[in-house]
Amino acid sequence: MSQHASTDAPTAEEAVMVSRRGVLFASSVGNFVEWFDFTLFGFTAAVLAKVFFPPGNEVASLLGAFAVYGVAFVARPVGAYVFGHIGDRRGRRTSLGLSIIIMGAATAAIGILPGWSQIGPLAPALLLLCRLAQGFSAGGEYTGALTFSLEHAPDNRRAWYLGLVGASTWLGAVGATMTVVIFQTASGPAFASGAWRWPFIIGGLIAVVGLFLRLRVGETPVFTDVQATTEKTKRPFRELVRGYWRTLLLLFAYFAVLGVLTHMFLGYMPTYLQKATGMSATTVLTLTTALNIVSIPVGLGLAVLADRYGRRPLIRIGASSAVIVVVPAYLLIGTANVFAIVLAADRRLALDGRSGSAGDVSGQRAV
Image (tube, rainbow, N blue to C red; front, side, top):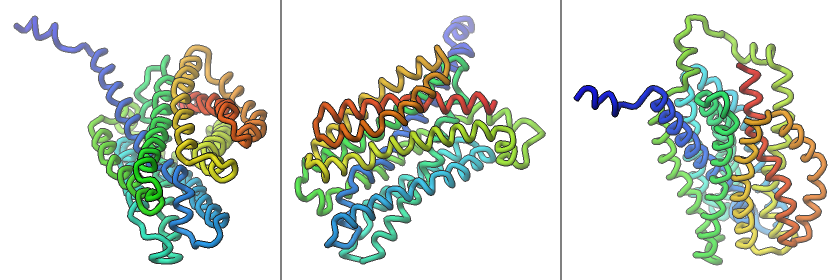
């Protein structure tokens, strides 16, 4: 009987593979929830402008809504620093658990906030606070999820692991657009009157699922090893800047460009197509959903290439593309031709698919 039991028992290698799959699933689901919540704001910006800003000047209201949307990016570096510190001191799992709680609470709060007609100027102020909380949380989420997955990944598949986490980001955006489209279609004109609130409330509720999955996985081997050592760095941020400032500048520049292009697509383009070209909201969001779905195999394919041929070539091509194609891409989008929009967005998708490679470069240089 003991022989039979030993035969059925999983080997150490099989146990590691099972653990890695669990980590990838938990990281990806949590990241899905975070970016479902974070991108909802951009897809409903036109409605939020009417609800939370004074009536009478549609352009000013839209500018106000997008200003609130953009404020999240001021909070993201702060969130990255704070959650990174928590992750180093208290554990990656603790950091990721806190980030998803804050994101879920902020998103659900947007869904129940009273508008300008009820509380006047306090409405956009509260919306701003919720958006700052979302940005703070997102700053810790994406980098935390990438770190969590990278520290579990085998050396020869690091870009693939990061590519899977990146794919969950776009799945979150797909989930957000599909949810908005479903509520717009089902409620019709009532969507702007109050049905828009339900996607935000749903986003807050599914954060509970992401938190549950996050708490079921263990800490990363890297964090466990660091905790076991007697010598610990007293000022890790100072040592990071001193030892890796060139890498930090490179990644800052790359992800600054990537962030601008990505959120021009996720946050600005849907509203631009509705207001400037006259496309219907349902058509715009359906098109955005389809493009987000296409971005997933594009990103995963580029991750395979990064593991096989290296990260730098893909990063250089992506950075060059950002400079060259952004203006022609928006000229194509301005035509309101579906084929032209798909062609322009495809350039952005190819660039974004290289972001996992850049994240892996930072991991390699910091080791």
